[in-house]
Length: 172
Image 1 (tube, rainbow, N blue to C red):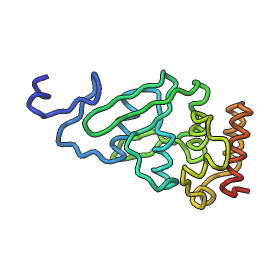
Image 2 (tube, rainbow, N blue to C red; image 1 turned 90 degrees about the vertical axis):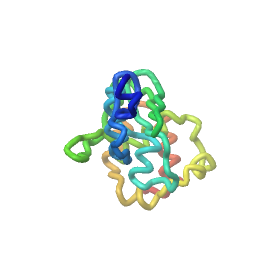
Image 3 (cartoon, one colour; image 1 turned 135 degrees about the horizontal axis):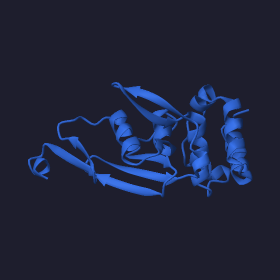
Image 4 (tube, one colour; image 1 turned 90 degrees about the horizontal axis):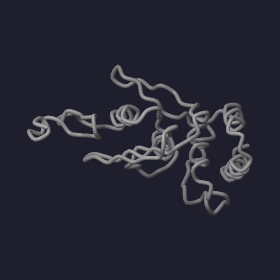
């Protein structure tokens, strides 16, 4: 408490603090997001932004977790966690930043996670609003990996929505 009052540290959430003079960039926020609510990995809109799949900046760090859906706010940001079944916590990679690793969804898994938690995205008009960088996705996505990942979801509705989305972005 004394260090907080003297502004040496800032509280992120109960039991988690950072030094007040620590600069917070995207990677540091990813490290924090992975640490304060485990198990989790960065995904959804934040992964889209990280991979330059959407033009907008994302101001909340969005992550997937097997725990309950939750949100945490602190002075420099907001962390949002969406629940996925434990068997769906795969398809992420470890990325190193300053001798630390953070978990972030692979490009294919970020798309599937996003479509999974947004079942209202069904038709072409729904996809237009995403302003998705289809060229970037087509160049970087691995079709085999996408097929393997969608099979692991075992969700016909999600599979139909994925097919419509891939058709929308002309991903053959």
